[in-house]
Figure 1 (tube, rainbow, N blue to C red):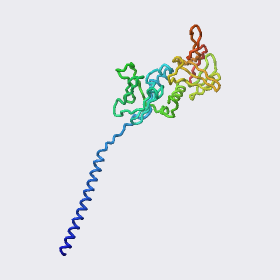
Figure 2 (figure 1 turned 30 degrees about the vertical axis):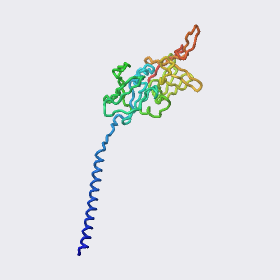
Figure 3 (figure 1 turned 90 degrees about the horizontal axis):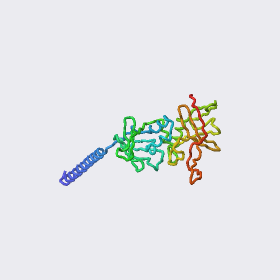
Figure 4 (figure 1 turned 30 degrees about the horizontal axis):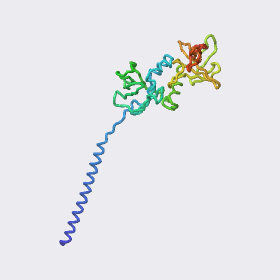
Length: 289
């Protein structure tokens, strides 16, 4: 091989080595970059153990036990938190005063015992805290709204439906009404001093009570209340409706029809915007099934 050919072979060899070297370096660099990017990603799994619908036992359980709605709807947390719905680290509340008065749509700290705090001028500052299998809602100790009650939420699978099919300003209002219809009123009754039977059906239908075929327990949602904070049941028919105060005493249900409130103004009898119990009273005796 002459000197010229030898020179060409040498140059070609050096070029091939250079190309292979570059490919190896590029391959190594790519691997290192991929590894660095992979190591830099910190994946945190959100705790989903709290997922579900949580209900305020101080509201539902107390009302059903004592068969009184008006008295226990005055607990401040009922205004914004009758039901809590948790999904991952998000929380949504439903109360009796609607979204415009404190309901929250917020984020919780699922890795802390203190899940969140909720504050407004109307209701003060409240803390939602893990408590074994329940949740506690407590007011700040320094808050001017003094309330020593421990408000307890429990997860209730049977009430999942209350956070679905929401309608109207007060969202869960129709669900709560239907719940009280069933849990407080439904059942068979006998007129006092008579064998006549009245049936309050769980779905709100009514059998045997005068000319009415439906009933509805007032849930006291909203801010317009004209019945002096007395418990109210409305009886309906296609033609008319009437409202009665209801009071349970053991197995007796006493119904007293509401009438317009009248007061004296400048020596004249004047009808107000409010209603008070009148003279018409019906007593029913609950019949055990």
